Each structure stands twice: as structure tokens, then as C-alpha cells.
Image (tube, rainbow, N blue to C red):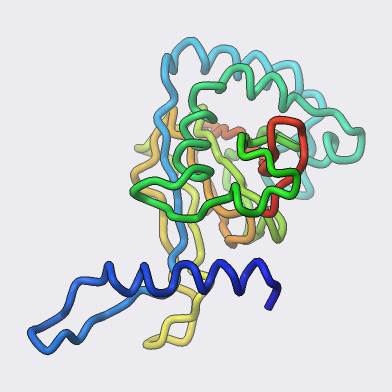
Length: 237
């Protein structure tokens, strides 16, 4: 293991064990050694921000492609090949919501004791998320997005723009740990998400969508983020 991982393990082990509630009077306990955070932020002023996002989508629709009839329509491939990106525009539209994610993830609080500042190589503890690519994805008439990840490091987001809960399904995440009972990956559907929901998750987590068999388009915007300091230095994520 790397020095960073060993240091993090040594720092957290005793503190986490002390916080475990005993199962009985003999002080037996169940300890959850690993967990996967999925964060939810409600986009503020959704009507206004939705229209701005739809304007971005309208200007990028001509760049959308799909591999076959069952594939989603997305400008992901065009953006990757051409270097085209509207991450700055998305950050400007969703600056408040990304700030909430920064508070939830990048600074120690009741939900996380991971202190990124210790791993900032330039000693600058003023940390932010930087969007490093972005794309729209639409599904209709049976199209879907099969299991995939967004890379080995960083965080990724899905924002539900056009989403009708009566005919559409939310993103499904696959547990990275095999079930001891079934010997397979269990799944978790983010069924709390609705139109205007911003979901953030670790990029390595496998996730997918089921086919949208309706005639009503399901539209999301997605992007990846890395952690940087205020002078632009990338931090271990």
C-alpha cells in the first residue's frame, strides 16, 4: 500500500472503532468496514437553471451520436474527440450546488472525516472541484446505457433534466463488493432522485440505466470532477 493509504488507515482505524455502537452488553459489535457514498443535492431555482441547461443541450444536439438503435444519444464521443466542452458553463449555472458538494466531500464534517488538506502537495488547503469533461445523454424508444464506470479516480455527477417518474427510471449503481449470500454484485437504484436532482458518486463505481421504452425522452447531463487547490494543483482523489 502507498504511504498515503497507510497513513489514512492508521489515522482512521481507532477513531472509527470507538464510534461503533455495541450490539449487546458483552460489547460485541457489527462494523461496516467499507461504504460507498452517493450524494444528492436539490438544484436551487430549478426552473431557471433547467432552461439554461436545455439551451446548452440544444446547441450541442447536432454533435450527438449513438452506436446502435438501443444505444443512448450523446455528445460524449464528439466532445472527447474534438476537445469540445461546456464544463465552464455548467459550473457557472450550478455554482451553488457544486459548492454544496465541496462542503459535503472536501471538508471534514459529520459525514466524512477524510481530510484532503493533508494530501495537498502544495500545502494549499483551499480545495475545489474542477469539472474536466461534460456531456448530455438522451434515451427514448428502448435505448439504455449499459454498465460502465467513469475512470479509476475522482467523482462523477448525473443531473436529471427531463425526467418523468411515471415512465423513467433512475440510475442504478452496482455494489463493488460481492454479496456473501448470493456471490454476485447487488444493485442500488437511486429511487430518491427526481427531475432537478444532482447525484454525485465516486467515478470507479459501476452504474447503468435500464431501457426507456417510453416515447418520452429521458435527458440527463453528466460530468467528471477532480479535486484541485486554489492555485490549480491537482490533489489525490
